[in-house]
Image 1: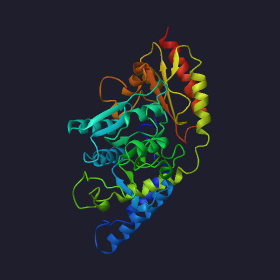
Image 2: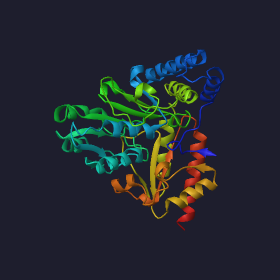
Image 3: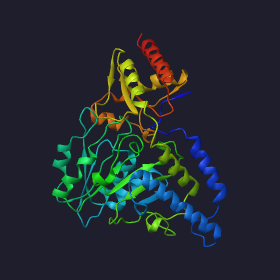
Image 4: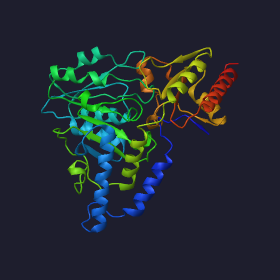
Amino acid sequence: MIYLDNSATTLTAPEVVREMVDCMTYYPGNPSSRHRLGAEAAKHLEDCRKRLAKTMGVQPDEVYFTSGGTESDNIAVLGGANIKKGKRVVTTAVEHPAVLECMKRLGEQGFEVVYLNPGKDGVVPLETFREAINAETCLVSVMAVNNETGAIMPVDKIKPILQKAAPRALLHTDAVQAFGHIPLNFARWGVDMVSISGHKIHGPRGIGALYVRKGVTLKETVYGGGQERGLRSGTENLPAIAGLAMAAELMKSGGEHVPALKARLMEEVLKIPGTVHNGGENESPYILNISFEGIRSEVMLNALNSAGIGVSSGSACASAKSGGSHVLKAMGAMADNSVRFSLSRYNTEAEIEATVAAVKEAAEKWRR
């Protein structure tokens, strides 16, 4: 199958699989145990933390391992909101459900939740953030790259607004679709918390990490044995952590051909009458969202699936919920007719040419 659904999950890199097998073979102990096998596992855990921190450009003691992007988002949003610092939290209407559901819970707890709408290009203008942030703001959560459209948000420009209007507020970014795909500089951006996930960068499922800037204190949301310095209890998934560290290192190079693949795909697909690009110039080179006027998403997805091409109509985490894409609706796009093509370093020019041919054939067939 030609796999173009990498925003949902990526294929696990062979190097990652080998790293995990080695970890399970040579480090079988529980990192919290006091015997030799436990000590060896604990040392390997910290070595992996150092490796991941280096790829993120942060300090090892600022990295906390979680079960994935969803848990990282939950810890950051629910643990970061502090009613003593303000009762207003700001986010966007196009966030991942992992953030939006947390915001819903905060609203039920008495917080004022402000949802900012994007422009037609999927990006929330910086001025919109400036108007929404005030002295009562205690938390701002903004994704770095949208998982459905690839829109790149102005996360790097939000901290100065906070420093002026709400200096005690925390800034969190869901970088699940950004880490390893676009240049990031968390220290320069001034973000306080960053969520990443292993299975979006050719790592294993069920593992993620949360960067918490030194000096930031969060309320713990998972209780137990006090692992991860008390923030996230539970025995560490050491093989998956090793896989995440390896995947992050692999993403430091390679993939240089992906922007050209996306450009070729977009150029050819937009030649089809009635097609619309749901996005703008400022978006990830790994994600392309297209609406096909007069053809429902399910029809195009099934046609491409029959041709051996895997794509999606939006977020896998929201696919079970009815109502269509909240992201495209917020943008005013054709939510019921959209297809998301999401690429990876493993895609080839031949696969893109085959995809273009299949899309053109399906469009012609279902518009007769």
